[in-house]
Amino acid sequence: MGIGATAGAAAVGGIALTAHASTDSTSKSTDDGLVFDPDAYTELTTTVTDTEGTEHAVTYHFWKAITYVSKPVDATYQSLIVSAPVEIDGTAVDASNAPILLANSVGGYMPSSVADATGVGAGGMGGGGGAPGGAPTGSAAPSASAASNANENPNATGGATSSNQLLALAAGYVVIEPGARGRTLKNSSGEYYGTAPAAIVDLKAAVRYIKSNKGRIPGNVERIVSAGTSAGGALSSLLGASGDSPLYDKLLKEIGAADASDAIFAVGAWCPITDLEHADGAYEWNWGTNTLAGGKQVDQAVSKELRSQFAEYQASMKLRGLNGFGALTARNYDEYLVKQYLEPSATTYLAALSDSDRETYLAKNTFITWKNGKATFTWADFLTHVGARKKTTPAFDAFDLSAGENNLFGAGTTQNRHFTAYSAKNDTTGLTSKRVASDIPEKLHLMNPMHHLVEKVNGRRSKHWWIRLGTNDTDTSHVISANLAAAAKGLGDEVDHLYYWDQGHGANTDPGDFITWIAKVTGYGKAGRTK
Image 1: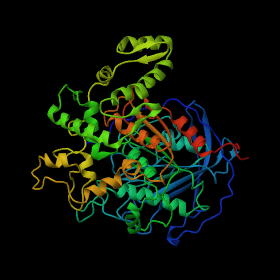
Image 2: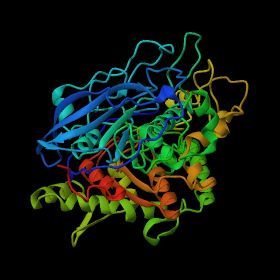
Image 3: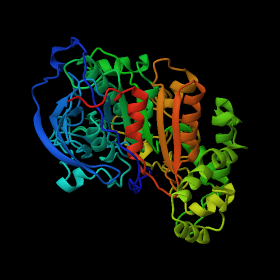
Image 4: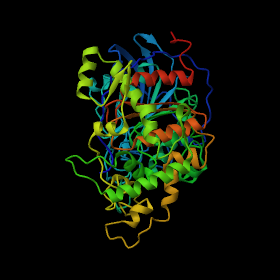
């Protein structure tokens, strides 16, 4: 399967515990079947360990799975859970105007369910082949110990961990976790009903449900911050980039989404697996010379052709690097990554070590020059340092249709399809047609945040972006998140993008900083906690 890897572990960061009162008025839902019941909660208590190791007793109201559309294809996945704090460390909290963390648990573009969730942070990937309306297959709530430790990062699939949800709850924010259909879902007739663009349509419908229930659902519906990892990070980015885009209106109407905005305030995206139609070229540009585990070299002729495709694509976007770097091209992107992201990442990592630990690390990694408190090295040495690439070539649209992304673009009873002209032309499965299906171009637009940031700039997009990637992540190319950041920054948006040194896919080593960032960009918490 082409998607997914081992997640890293959360480690450092601060946490701000703040909340204040709201005077938001209740809005009327356009669909009486989509009215949130403020009184249908269970009161729960949990202990959250913050990133400094301090335990916080949190009492919160929990609303079990609520179907967020009036005409669900499969309510097992098209449901959300809500958690709102009411007391933190013995102090009453009014979260009625708190930011809302919309945390998806999508990994690998697989289905994600909260149907069985019994507490905050309990969303997860469930099932792959149940018919619509079948028994829920979402994961159960984590154990008490797992749920309470916000510094754990146990999800090896690339889906979201509970770190962000738990820390947000302990900071006084409202946490809403939506389920979404995914690529493996198949009905009794053998038809796939969770392939593209089902997941993004579902997440948009969840946002519309939240906004249509302003004043009933806890939290400030104008301060929704989306969060996701891997494919979930791509969907979080897409949700932010495509706010209120008319491209989705028909699809949203078909499932009975509320008549409300689906624009969100801010985006949190970890290692986003996105820009899929250009991901093969970007991957080869980045990792083309690295061997697979075991030392096997990928087909260099294919790698070279894909790198050429990337060069053309990169030039066509006319993106400019952060901090006045200038035009980003295939020729200078290595320099840009090293100076903008990689050396600063290594510097931060090394500066945080003790003198003896730093000396030990540098002795093992002689490619790094450490001088005046700054790390420097070459791109070539960095690639050698990372070592084996995870994916063969092409990485995402496999010639033999074996990648998870091929399943993402399946349709009807066809499980896997090509979505790039290059891979369709070089198909090895015996397809009679060597061209992509006619519906693919539109689906690519629906699934790619770059379409809404570069090709047709969306004025209703999020204006705040938190983007993270591990330097050792070979599930994707480093240019994918860097292009996303450059596109948003070029439009004047606020962008906080950095790489975690020596971390792999799914890492989140500064979760406390993300919680603090939410308070900063939303302007929340200045009044202090409500007594």
